[in-house]
Image 1 (spheres, helix red, strand yellow):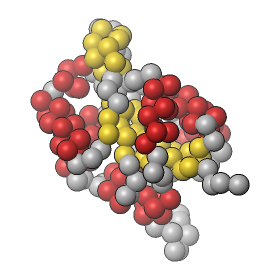
Image 2: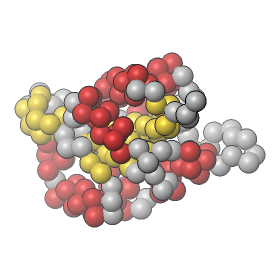
Image 3: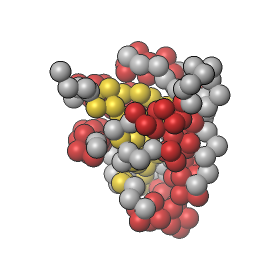
Image 4: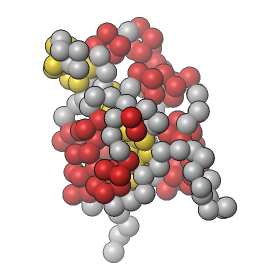
Amino acid sequence: MAKNKEIILGVCASIAIYKACEIVRRLRDKNCSVTVVMTREAEELIKSSMFSHLSGNKVYTNMFEEALPWDIEHVSLAEKADMVLVAPATANIIGKIASGISDDLLTCLICATSAPVLLAPAMNEKMYLNKITQGNILKLRSLGYKFIEPTKGKLACGKVGVGCLADVDRIVAEAIALRK
């Protein structure tokens, strides 16, 4: 029997975090193994146990968790990944990746992986359209990172604008297509 493809799902702090739960479920329905890596800020919005239950795997939240002596987590996760999907991807994580800042488990993992990386932004329209955010996206695209554009809809602030996380079915389809 063929090995299930391993998708690392990076989850950042965005109001769209609840959609990451459905992304895990749909990827599992497609016979993918999903390992979730949450940012510290994401843990303020949803418990890691929810993702552990949905994925059936350990959820990683801290670069300095107790690890086996031979297992450096960000490197071992980066090596086992067939692809890395970050959904929702905040302006913060996009900026850190574009700047080469590796100060948490997710950014270290992305820096260490040779697998394709797909980012699905979700943020306020003003943040998404900000020249710095757009410059970071352009830089990452030029380096081979893939993006799923956010959609227009009702934002957390109550206004309508671009910045809503793309449709879950679209994210899952693009992640499946991008696996190495």
